Picture (cartoon, chains in turn cyan, brown):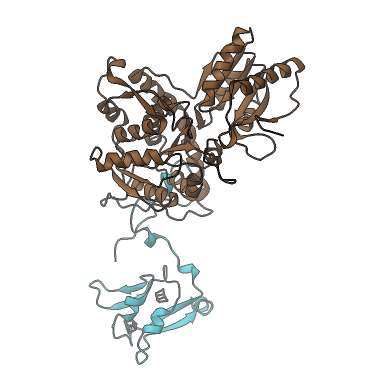
Length: 111
Length: 402
Ligand code: SF4
Ligand code: SF4
């Protein structure tokens, strides 16, 4: 994973310091924009059942399937960005079921 | 900047229409991109310019788009990628650009655009009034008005410098009166290509889309948490444009000998009654001022060149001794309390200890001719207001049948 970026424009910045014209003056800033709290339901990864077919990684629209260093194995879910669409759960092969879902209400009880 | 000692020696007297003068100015500026769509009475500007392109006189990328909405959109894209970009329009064409006008100014792209003023439909009309430009007065564009082809030509170069100034970075419109200036032929002193090149310099914006080493996002979402800050920064850019307008005018005067400012004062310094006017009507009104002066009437005139940023402090200072002012608006705001120039000037005068009386003349809509008699009748009315000390009616429609 790339190094975590700080948002170039910080919460609470005033008109005197923000970049003019509404530009975002650097790339890759979506990583710093945490969208995890939009979620009402989350995927749960079960490493013991995972066959690392990469279907979930290929389909996730938010690049929230986390891989190991060399990109060969699924190691978990980036819950700071996962929006809970459950597409990953859908594409995980039926015979494997290495991804299941749990509501955020339930998850909060376990946290 | 190269040294230009003898300003007259570097100029050529040529006969040009307003449109030809603006197209010539564009040739000399040689923008990187021109994206345009034809509309009367502006068509000639981009038609002539496209000839320059096909004759190889300029290296400009000419984009013949399918509408004015696309023309302004193309300019936004090219200006953001670091290319000096221009278009030109009139009336309904400007109206079709509306959405993108705000995007250009909000994104702080210094696009320069000649606007040949024409009445908005309906009823459909192709002749001059200022309702098109005045409608866009809150769009965040700098607005420079011209009295004749010479001023239109000179304003173009200054507009580029004002718009692209690092303290400003806002788009600018340079207007002429449709047909009256755009199609009328006059003597225009033109500059040397080299002089123009040195004056306008290179297009530089702080960040551009094609700088792959420093990637940026242009036009992202800014919601409740940031939109307001962006608009306030934009408002301050317009305030910062004011001293820049003056600074550039002084530099241009040194170069050409022609003096520009926020407005021109004509026999105003000791005037009892005066009109405030924009564009070509100033020429006609000056004749009336001279005639009235011969009768011993202290008549004067103020011709506003810069409507955005609105030079309210300087205007207050210039008119403070005048007893009665007649503001001539070539557009109506349908607010039932007068046209845009009237409302703004009147508001600007509110804090003065001694305010001139002020009334409004809406005139010349849809190209209705304004002659010496009409302006004289307005002046006579100003004199009777001076006697009575009372403004009976805010809005007067000049030269209209009942
Ligand atoms: S739930 Fe949707 S967003 Fe979250 S990891 Fe799965 S596919 Fe990606
Ligand atoms: S789709 Fe299922 S089995 Fe395939 S990598 Fe993802 S979690 Fe593992």
